[in-house]
Image (cartoon, rainbow, N blue to C red):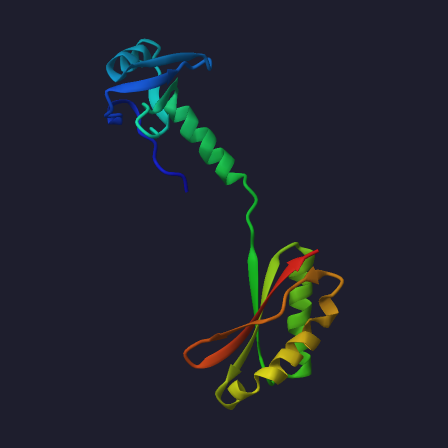
Length: 169
C-alpha cells in the first residue's frame, strides 16, 4: 500500500513550494496562503513530496478525493503475481508424482510461478544428496516450460526441505 499523504490542515510547516492544479509552479509561499488559494478554488492542498535538507515540501492544489479514487483504480488493475506451491515427499509413488507434475504443468501454462518443495522427514533427512538427484530428475519434464536454479535446503521443525522456484519461460 502507499503511505497516507498530508492534506490541508495536516500540513504543519510554515512554508511550502506550491504547484498549481494546471502544473504551473508558483514558488515558495506560506502554508496559510496556499490553503487560502486551495479554498478559493474548491481544491485541496496535498503534500506531494516531503522536504529534503531544509527546503520546504512540495505541495499541489488538486481534488484529493479524485486522486485517491484514481490510485485505487490503478492499484486494482495491476497484474497479480501468483505463486503456487507443490509439495512432495521423498518416497512419493509414481502415480502421485505424475498427478503433481500435471498440476505444475497447468500452473506454468497459466504463467504462474511454482515453488516445488521436496520434504524429507525422519530418517529421510540423511538422504539430502539423493534428494537433490531426485528433484533434478523430477524437474526434467519442465525444461521446455520453465527455468529454475539449484534447490535451496532449509531446516524446518520436523523436516528438511529442498525448495526450487520455477519461473515460466
